[in-house]
Image (cartoon, rainbow, N blue to C red; front, side, top):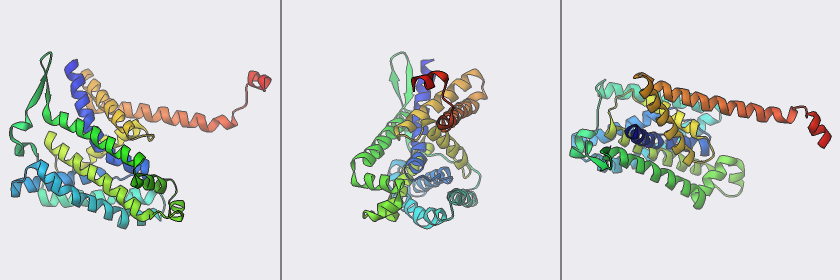
Length: 301
């Protein structure tokens, strides 16, 4: 049981890392980026190319890939999301969905259907582990991914709360028109937020390549895990994304313990349970102003 709990914690760390960028765009910029998973796979392929063709260690390759990913996020906001948002809330979702399809097929055309992994390029680290009391072994790479997720979420939360850029991002998210009136360049601020989110996507691509395999169409499952973790965690804080990722990972682990095919089902059931609970709470909150007071309430009034 302790082994399953430890594995669930490490899996939750990966889910948190891949979900934080999506949650950041949803919570801060009110945008659902359906190309999120595909962009993670794009970053993984870029790091793999550097390792395979130029013998660049994946960690060094990530340092080279993250700046272009930030630039990609900047232009994605300026030339796709910003323009599509003028057509309503639905159009940006459809635009990123179309972008994911295009990128998926381009990567398939370039790399084929073969799976890739970054673990062959890190030597013994791919299977190295920490030994805990009781004969429990934790892989070093999953542990590092969990720590990276905590650091990234903490850094983003601190940036939003304590820096001028964070205040500009929050102001732009609340009311871009008013933000412009008080001197904030809403367009640049939104683009900067998208760049930060896309950097975290690049990190999740590195994590995926180090802990498993990927192919051209691996983006959709990663998007699903990220979306479920972000929704379970709620929209109050990015730390909620970490909690949501842990809940998702534990639900999947419990499902796998109950039945060999229950891994995904356990996560989906946890997601649906949280979703319906929130919809019920929202319905009750909307009905409250129109509810007839009880006899006791009328008497007390």
